[in-house]
Image 1 (cartoon, helix red, strand yellow):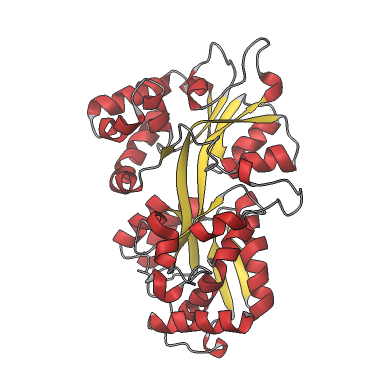
Image 2 (cartoon, helix red, strand yellow):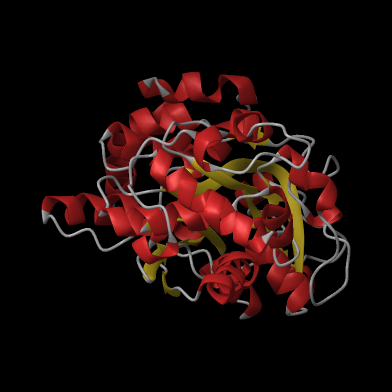
Length: 370
């Protein structure tokens, strides 16, 4: 089976025109870019190390995904693309695809079918939001809080809107230093129905309303740029409540036994996955395609869920999610897609942010300096 995996991956590369038909034609080293922390560790455990053991390839890991769009633009401008495979959120994949910096993929040609023969495109379904995108996981940006800092006689926070309630829950907050998520929560917690949020954000009235809501907590907010910051701020007691990726909070709570609770209300669901930089040399492209065939099959995506509480993007992977690889606890209840956690979740609007991201990034950064 291992030999078959390698050969079929190489065949996928050939179908894309890479011209490689054997391991000898593939690069013996690849640079894979991701987000660092518990998430990148889950990829190393579930994908990188098994693939390297099987093929002998040297995998270099890079933690620059937060700046992937800017970095890739700069690489292509300088005609020096050093990355082979890049993990990005869906909206960034759409931008990179639109700009011609990410390569279109025929998912059924280069990825494995589900065990029952279902083509990859059907198994991934609606998570394929761009022809350049290979989804891996569904995750959420949600909130954690210090359980020992909840005021006496008060119920613990239940979700995003408690961040705006300084009277009931005094103390510092932590929010990401970008508009995504913050703008949606500001409007939702100011009474805008979830289904109307993005229409409102297209108006000046909606933008002003969101920024006015954020103004109410601006002076009490620490702004983070890396997902590891909020768990550390919570662990150090420097903030009462903060947003970050649900997998980061899972690691802090279950693996590190920190006094942190989860507040799932109005979590923002999102997708994360791979893009292949456009115009890679043939030997590097062949290696990437071989890796992707291996790392995105049904079992491998389920394997990642043993290391972090993110739901696999393939439908066929969900029934295979089991216990945590080290703690032995069932992972299903810790997934953002668990019905008990996602009752009032909202789905990040990839298309909307792909259209408005640059404009709102500039406006948000200007607001921060005011």
